[in-house]
Length: 306
Ligand SMILES: [Zn+2]
Image 1 (cartoon, rainbow, N blue to C red):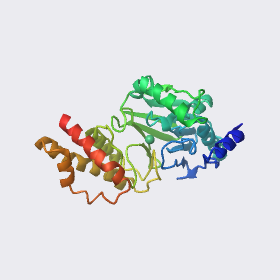
Image 2 (cartoon, rainbow, N blue to C red):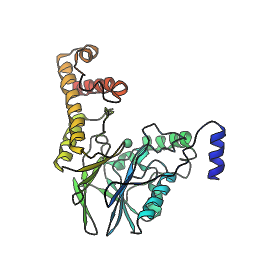
Image 3 (cartoon, rainbow, N blue to C red):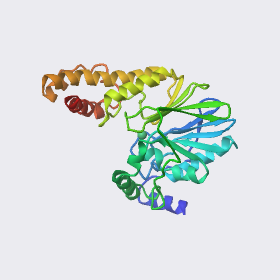
Image 4 (tube, rainbow, N blue to C red):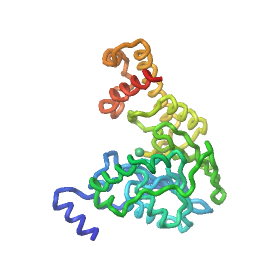
């Protein structure tokens, strides 16, 4: 069936990424898969976000579930390739579609799904239902009528929670509202490894969207306090200098707030303020052209309201 579908898609001119996922080893215990830097499509199977897993003497912890059940099954196969430890937890960094449509596979495989309680509102919202329907329309056969939203088995309400997995202490830190209300990062002190969700982006200008940048900056400060040696972001390559990357995102957000805040405060028109600001530090960073003006405008509106 899968082969037939692939053939049909090929014949209709849509190329299908035939290669199965391959998990890369980050440290002795930590693995990850890196999604494509693209929007979700039939061709990429909605493989546009990262996921990772930690193998301990007390079982396996997975962070995020990828953008379709098929991808999740392949990730599960990769886990089985490297260990026969039991699957224990899946931690959801946030409930965005590309990170969660594989959850049902891990749930069926016996994992306990853990997420921050702020995600529950979104999960039960009309927005989430509409988004799933749109994905079924746009991303079939990878997202179809059998794909469903999966609630956490354990909703975290504390700012910081610890999971004990064998001899490993796993720290779950709520850092939202930043990218989303429910943002959670996963930190393993013994390994110096952090799974950072979509809180920072490596080597590119972030999409700020409607995010509350003041709180986002505070979240980045908290992540810097952990002093991770390695960070696995929700998108893009692994960071081996996470402090520099965290600071870059923090400083960019702070710069937006400073320049746009002054303009909003002085009632300067946005276009004038944007033209006057010195963007030289960021102009050559990837996605500057696509994202910077919109980021500045959103920040301008935000600062008017603050
Ligand atoms: Zn994401």
